[in-house]
Amino acid sequence: MSLSKGDKVHWNTSQGKTVGRAVEKRTTEFQHDGQTFKASDDDPYWIVESDKTGATAAHKESSLEKG
Image (tube, rainbow, N blue to C red; front, top):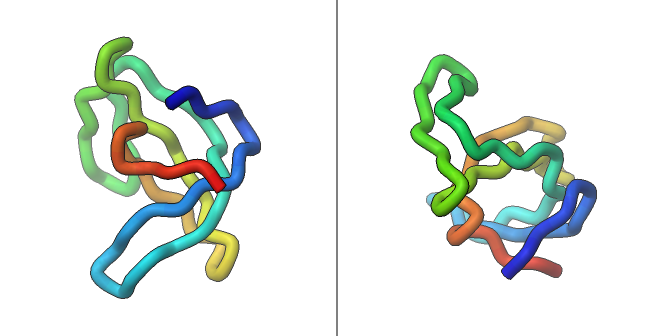
């Protein structure tokens, strides 16, 4: 799957499915909300923004679904 900035995505949380949009792809180690994420070209992460709350989070690309 290939995501692009602005794509509608959804992902699972402990509260259920969350819908939002892909904001920024990361392919190197980075920090978000005080956590360190070890992203790479082979295992990229995306910063996503929830439609419901506007909160941002970092998720592995493999955990996101388009649509």
